[in-house]
Image (cartoon, rainbow, N blue to C red; front, side, top):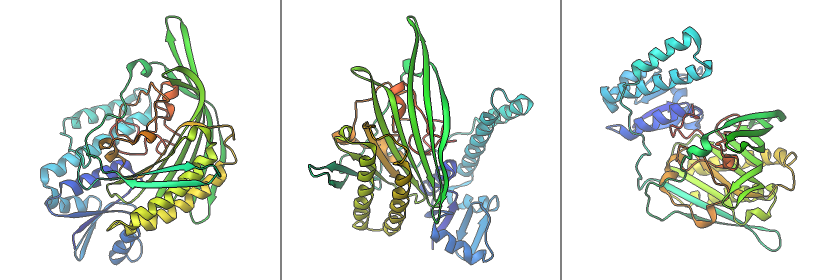
Length: 408
């Protein structure tokens, strides 16, 4: 059997490092998330009384964990590249710790800054998704509501040439200004049996920018729902308020759904409801649920995706349960001008794909997002700000490891 690296898929940094090891390995290294049942089977052979939350390297008749596995990994990626990966990990952890301290962090912050500077010189290891590959698969699913009110879903696999595309361009003009959350409160906080915790928050996002003519103020009411299951995370983000369009500022709604799962395969599924601006949010979500079923059929017809098919069954069950709660709190008159759902563990591959016309939107403009990974939902662009949902992760930047900083 090939070596198996087992890692924590809920950690975007860990996922990025695991995919880099798989990509650069001299001999095949399979990667599995700790939450993957196959990983549990492998670990049970070596740890029948249970195992700790750590990373493991399973080889034939042997298993090492944590720091002890580093020496073992050296023979797969080489000493130099392994040192670079360890440097990246340490640098990211120090940066995140400094950010959590706020301000200069006092003595501890200055000490961390010194550590950060000392390891900043480590050369960065190229990621597994920085160049297009024939292994990258992107599927699209488009829902439509017919004259009877029924939802019809069409799904297909991208056949266009893969090339790097700048989906979003940072605007220094819109990056200026102060963005804050106000009037924030929790609408739902519960645990769904056999699935996991569910939280729904409501907040108002306000951005103020000083202009020569005075202070420009934009605002957006946001509803953010998150469901954390052992093998996937679902986030629903809906915003309503000032949308900056090519025709000026209007009042309207926008929405996005992000689903991150633990199978690190180079597959991404993108979903939309065509002509969705005439439909309430609940119809969008019903269309997304039907699209999950249709995409499961697409994966069933593809070779080697049995694990993804099984996982999609669980994801749809959790999604429908989340929709039940969310539909009770979202206003019925919200009709999103922009809508999109992304399902993937590796959304970075979307940077190589041109979206079909029905998936593109010119409504809102002025995004200040700099990650250009293609996974950004752009829901905050209406107020001229990239608004990460709370908790940061699902919906906007879904822990894609793109390097924009909000994944840490």
